[in-house]
Image 1 (cartoon, rainbow, N blue to C red):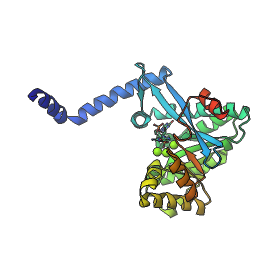
Image 2 (cartoon, rainbow, N blue to C red; image 1 turned 30 degrees about the horizontal axis):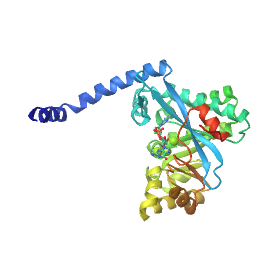
Image 3 (cartoon, protein in one colour; image 1 turned 180 degrees about the horizontal axis):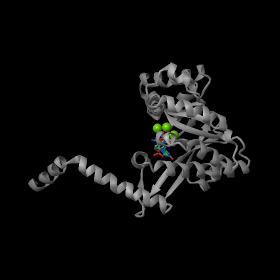
Image 4 (cartoon, protein in one colour; image 1 turned 90 degrees about the horizontal axis):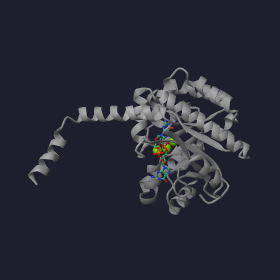
Length: 279
Ligand code: C2E
Ligand code: MG
Ligand code: MG
Ligand code: MG
């Protein structure tokens, strides 16, 4: 018992920073190797018209399967990739893979399918970003209007000048932009008005809260009204239950993404899901 306690406390009092840094270094080394060995891949989560269930698009989400067959969640490895700069090449891989898949869907008749790709601030800060975007669009020959880039609200606030300049360049390519995790980044109405974006994604925290508290549904309602008054489309993420679907619809949000409709799946399963075939 004493031994257990001792072990516990020594763990607790060990220099957390050092352990942390070592852990992160190991993880980053694994991520680099994983990227080189093609153990990173992209999955797609459908977005639907919540009234009819019709598919409108999909969000591309990165996955990392380690050599041991373990999945490391993106919330753990994306920040590392951002800090190390590795996100620039990984992000280009995601963008190209998603565009390639979009082209396949366009060829299958999904001519106005929206493919959404998450972009980090570190990618935006990299001088070659617009050229990377143009090259991906050119090489895959997709309809640029079908590509949507997702940036987070906090990222738009952190470096507003940079982001605003890039939004104008993105617009010229034909691609659209969504603000992800909206409601968590404290942007003001005036800041939002200056951002040339096309869509707001209500963070799933507010979707979850909308069901249990009136404060939560007030935030969801505010985001929906804000989007409407600025002429932006609004989508709710993290729709898990039928009650949430109905509640968001009642609040005036027509588009949704979440486990209720579909989980993120590999490309072949996305295509089967779109053809309404069993996965
Ligand atoms: P995000 O962009 O907000 O993506 C939505 C997250 O919510 C995804 O988590 C998705 O799997 C999850 N999700 C979707 N529906 C539901 C639901 O009904 N319930 C719950 N509980 N979760 C749901 P995931 O795939 O783990 O990604 C986490 C975050 O990692 C993303 O949040 C995004 O910020 C980042 N990320 C993922 N892929 C990329 C990428 O290629 N590039 C960059 N820069 N970031 C990425
Ligand atoms: Mg996203
Ligand atoms: Mg999100
Ligand atoms: Mg989120």
